[in-house]
Length: 339
Ligand code: FA5
Image (cartoon, rainbow, N blue to C red):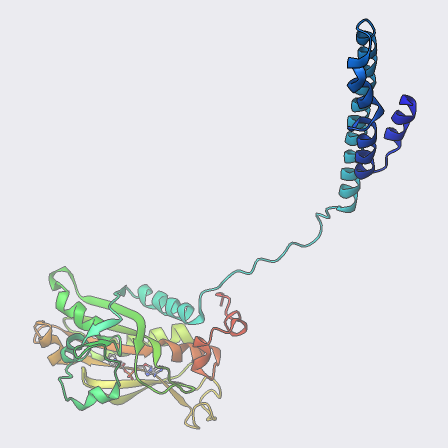
């Protein structure tokens, strides 16, 4: 019987079958358990002989079962490994890298241009007070120019900044001219109650610049803007300066570049004028200097303000500003951060 049991164990082809055999040969109702249970009925002198024999048989069965179990487990593992072959030459799962938003790329490109000319970056506050956003910039209450920048108010005197010029007012207030002139740019997010359309957004980005020193002239302003525009848009862009009006500069100008689409010949993009407006600028108004307690007889200079969104649209031929804010990954991933 024992040889038959040992053979059955060795022929078991899977763990379930082996477990059934184990119950049959070693379980409560198995012959070997019956023998061991019946020991008490044997004669005293027979007990050691029978006991030893029964134990040997049981140990033999336990060892055979353990061996077969290990063999079957190894076999199952081998089969699994053979099935799960790892092909190290297969291409991996691609990891998609994020890229800076195109508006941030344009902002950084412009920062590089101005930092190359020795400008320093000054960051201000998205939530501003009326005093810095309007009053210090020669726009007292009821000044009609306030209507040019329809405002989101938070309280009566606190608002979302409508342009980056309050940065300039703050710098003028704080600057110590014994340490040198002011030469700063202020990039950031601004807010206006404009109705969103293809070229207007209620939230957009601007970059302001300001240079204040002794003997600064309109020629310095023109030279700075020409260099910056050519660096950003390319040397082949023609530049035109037009008179304009801003309360905080006098005289004021607006700057146009030849249309990127038709190269100045006239098309729908430039409304058949051949030119596209890119920024506002001018010589700092003496009232702005006085409001910041800067001696307007000694110091003077220029300021300019450009729309980052418009610069990005012109550079990349984007016809709807709203695309910048819709977060469509197919649109944004076209701008991979490399020129
Ligand atoms: C100003 O905001 C002045 N602070 C600029 C300035 C600074 C002039 C210093 C003189 C001296 P303006 O409102 O024109 O000016 O806005 C400047 C630029 O912001 C515009 O040329 C345009 O490019 C952009 N811009 C204005 N409104 C919007 C809008 N709703 N959506 C997107 N871009 C806009």
